[in-house]
Length: 109
Image (cartoon, rainbow, N blue to C red; front, side):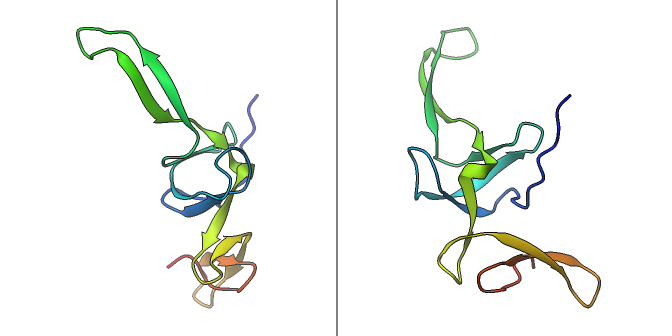
């Protein structure tokens, strides 16, 4: 049985890699996989896939992004200019939004 990982990181968020060989890299999230606890980040954790030639595609070495653990990325706050933890709060109109725990800025528009 797989359990969903609770995460506040969403697709198209700007994140900072905080662990691994790409530590310190800032990039955009392509895909979030809460079932596996993974996230796919653009141009981070690149792997080389050796593909066989077929009628549909030419063979060769293809570079692509590999999933990495959600715990290895942190949301990038443009106001703080660093990786931050996310909190949540409810606005007067009833919407629940994500906030920066460092500066308190509302991140969802």
